[in-house]
Length: 113
Image 1 (cartoon, rainbow, N blue to C red):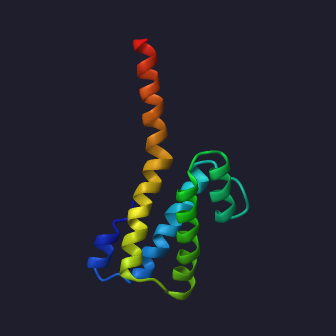
Image 2: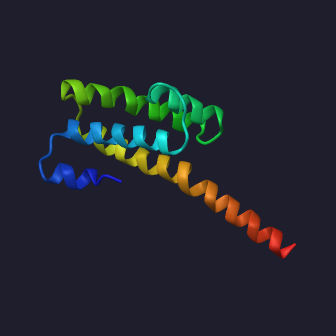
């Protein structure tokens, strides 16, 4: 997880932080088994597969779109970078941790039954 706050404190251009968030989403969609020719397709496939929810997919598309602008046009502000970092934490938790937590809880309850 990129440390956006630290990047901003060290006077990084906020557009770099925004682009970094997009890159993390891109890599995660590949790691999670998203299919398609681009990040947009992979986000949609993860939604269809139930790996992510609709609100998370919508935010991921938002980051994808604005992150592309940040990458190509050096466009992005500090508030945007902080908001994207907050979302990224939600995305990572939902995509990687919650499923494992639910599986663990189900396994635990099956052993007690």
